[in-house]
Length: 449
Ligand SMILES: C[S@@+](CC[C@H](N)C(=O)[O-])C[C@H]1O[C@@H](n2cnc3c(N)ncnc32)[C@H](O)[C@@H]1O
Image (tube, rainbow, N blue to C red; front, side, top):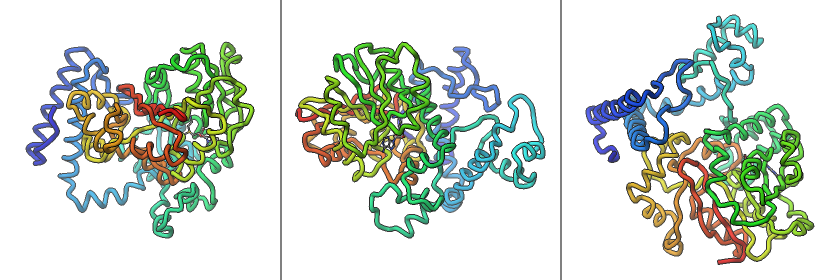
């Protein structure tokens, strides 16, 4: 479906009607569960990926509905809603903090007064907070994996107009009065740290936006031969486990904070125990000098660099160098942002990993890839086969890492610059992308052009 050109009320509504019909027809003809917001309705868009054309239509429908909403709202009300949208997140946070989601049964209605009693808050404010949350579409029937929302970020910007690239230069510092990186904060607040660990594993769940299965498919892990993969900042080792079960030639060292590693080590299935080591290691320290005695090493960093500013990413990369040999492989598993304006407007602004899977198809079909490569990489890299992984620029993560970590999501060109700044011997060889994954694998080799 061609990008929307007619932004009039009539043009957008006609497009919405047409797209809706296509989706309904597909659902009816193939006995697919109907779209529904009921508690027992499908949790995700129910049309399977085997109907890629319908997913493109869905993308067009989301774009048109989002534009229609903006059109009808009008610029000044739209700006006002954006300015007030932090109340949406703050009410959800309140509900999360008081475990209100757990207090609402799945199978029956409950009075506000009873929720208030369960969570230990007064009825009036419980009611108001819940009602506000419900206006955002929350049915109050699921417990969300909440991310920290740095409401204090605008205040930070106002008082700190120069970016020192330090990880504590963000909203959390103002909100909690502690000059800490968000990871030091999680480490000092066990309950929140635990929640973050759970959220990370959940994002990688089967069918989730960062399904670990994509890691297995994006890259031919058998190509690195008999090797030990060092999963730097590997959390509970959940992603390494997925790779290990498919590639028996690989052993794994999972590095992270001791507290983070512990539940992963305890949950490791017995058949993987001989192939895994959980090694507490701070990635701001050089890799242990005895690591090279482990034979062929490959380093793997998944969703690590996006948590840090360039200054700190440079240190993380430089700390690998003591353990690298000529030709060593460093695999960076991250979102690679496409340039602004090259994607569907809905995703430019809002982002959604759910639809991302189909955008690869759009790229293929519309030959956008070549343009993207040229625009994002510039002439020296033009001949290489780079494929932008994510179709959206402003992901929830881009906002999250900016406001909570003083960090950033990066384009392919920004990654390339980062590798060179860390050490000119790092060479970005290829960006591996699997349709469906919101993350790419950037294959970096040490000292090999
Ligand atoms: C965004 S999570 C990614 C976890 C895992 N790689 C994944 O893909 O799910 C970032 C991880 O970096 C870890 N981390 C943060 N600072 C660290 C440090 N200085 N040294 C080692 N690990 C660190 C965190 O504990 C967390 O597990």
